[in-house]
Image (cartoon, rainbow, N blue to C red; front, side):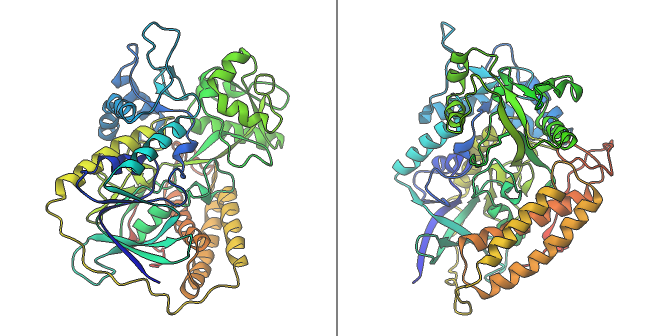
Length: 537
């Protein structure tokens, strides 16, 4: 059974970036949005904190830019930072026009937005919807997309590979669609499009402990790499300092806003410790806080440390953090009275597919936006709440660029249906589960918060072995969601490891005991497929 679809624009991913792009495409153009699960799946609904934007009279654009550059350890591209920060207010206004109901400050006569302060920010500038900002944004944008006449939503779809002129043995360097697995019936579908936008999120599922949902397997980064796109700064994996530590609490994040509102990080004996690592204490940037927690846990042999907001008024805590309060109560933790057990967890992929100011990649008519992309905004460490802003800004910019070309880009050439004639159904799925576990464990142990050359070489040796094993498996058996995600994770893990090996300094999120100093000249790590050892599969 074969299914074929043709659209003007194919958007792979249904988070804030993908939906912002979809909703800004010319309404006369046909748009397909692919979602791995239900439309509202992905990482956006998990974002608790908010969106950074200069809205307070006491704040200014130059301050937001300066804070971002400092948090990014001088590796941010200042022109990109400036562009995105300048569009902060417009992005908030657009979200409000769509129907997002941000929290207001009821203590003021004008009831302006209630702004919180997070690590690395010198002012209160984080707009939020209580402590479920991502959920509020996702639900509104999903409703808008479902009601848009020109947008068709395809749920439970996972892209396998991009279709390019190179794959079709045609001249030129153009992307013309994708092969997509329908997870509900296991059939592979063909989506042809004049433009393709990757908005698939990051790759934090490469690590054993992560705040991300299961779908964060680096699919778009791996597909773009296989299609010939460069990747940059993949060594900068942000570990969120505070994920709830409980055997039944899978991937539950404790927003940085808890620390912004006075939450204290404590050792098991109740002692505060952050002042020993940074004068900003609990409000130091995430890389510093995560490293401090990791250091203290290893020093003490502790399974977790604690985040305490119980010294604040109980009504204040419940009103500001209702989602966290209710979630913790399910595990017997009353955050108005008890400290929250926490551990660091892989949280955000600061590198990604290289793009220009419009979100264009190295392949014509292929765009990448959101966490899957490398714009230059985050540098060596993403500052809290800048990522949702980047999603909205680049969603708009990529759509605008596509709209300007709609009349000039021809329909794509025909592509063959997916060929499954040489494969069989697997009776060895245990191989996938074992390889998945091995990958995530050695990435955590060897390519985590603190690195060494020896650890990285061990990881490289293991990822090379996994590459070959999964290639053999992929060549012989029918595709499945688990196989596709593992294939992509191994590719992205290899990119992370090779990038980390190349960076012989400690900067931001890349901290190595072999090179503790920071180079005087900041430089991006850029990997090019044609000059790289990853298998072409």
